[in-house]
Amino acid sequence: WVYLEVPSDSPSVMAVWEDPWHRKERARGRVLRRATKALAVAGGVAMVSCNGEVLVPLLSTKGGFKLSQLGVGTWQWGNKLLWGYDTKQDATLKDVFQTFTANGANWFDTGDSYGTGELEGRAEELLGQFVKEGSADVLLATKLAAYPWRLTPESMVEAVRGSLGRMGRVDIAQMHWSPRSYGFGFQEDMLLDGLCRCYDAGLCRAVGLSNFGPKNLRRAAAIFDARSVPLVLNQVQYSLLSVERESGVAEVCKELGVRLVAYSPLCLGLLAGRYKEGAKPDNFLRSLLFTSLLSNKDTQNLLSLLQEIGATRNKTMAQVALNFALTEGQGAAIVGARNGRQALENLGACGWSLEEGELKALKEAAKKAPKTQKNAFFSD
Image 1 (cartoon, helix red, strand yellow):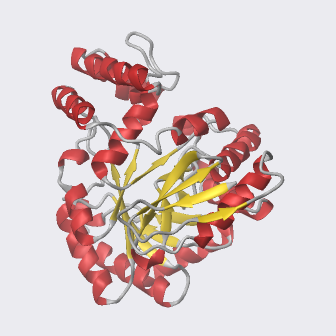
Image 2: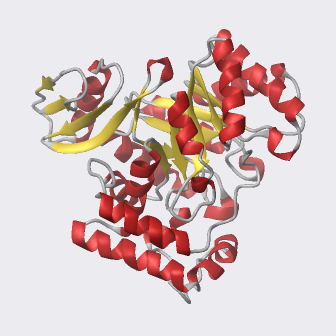
Image 3: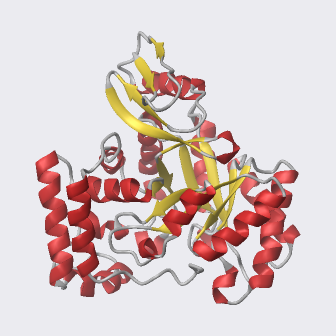
């Protein structure tokens, strides 16, 4: 049985389906997708559950989308430099894709720059392949890089066409970063115009932004509103240790009706407890990023608190840290996973909320801890 439930503050809707093969993952995923598509609720959050188990809440957005509170990031797919990608991992990544979709995650986030060197665009290619080979009904969001040579509206249109060739479709076309963050406001204006043209031409169903701070988000949102282009989301580095979390961007997103999407909510695994003091990560860049953080006593106090709350709630550190980002940010988050086990762990961050006392304790501990460096492309 699959139930579709809506909280009491939303219009009352419940749909029930029976599937004689519900014990099989593929059948369960198929019924879940049917139930998810049937949801027609204006505003609010819908809870999708299977056999009585709450899965991933659905969030309403501009443009009529229902995004699962947890989206799936594909930064690792094709990235040799930071994540040690190898084509031998493709079967495991397909399992990750199937695990997320079978358990209620209904959108994937990627980028045309994802994949290092000759593998640029690999993440989009794999995502398009997995969608084509399966039956999952998912939304595809891709971030288009604001490369220095993309200076005209047509260059953004061509970028979306390239993503269409690799994935088959683009539901949400996003600007990956803000050129205005380094003084190239003229380029940003051209590319925002290009996104509007993509929507008008039917190349995408909506648009999104990434790394746009409060001031610049207001500016971009006004441009899209003037041309009746639905701005669905704004992706921001958002975790207990991120500087961007303190910028006020979450409040502006809420004011404008744009969904905040937290990326790197686990701080590349640090908040999941995967790296211990004195034990360096197996990657040089992550080691460089984390060594000073892990040696700080306030960081260790924060990690201990995450572990303590997790033990009380029978949750992992990763689930607590991710739930914090979802609860405080009042939006969605994108997470990655190296295997199906990690995917299921991340999904376990949904369907419950930290209590006020727990949130307060985590905020106080995070306030004392050193922060990660602000993304260089994050605009004010």
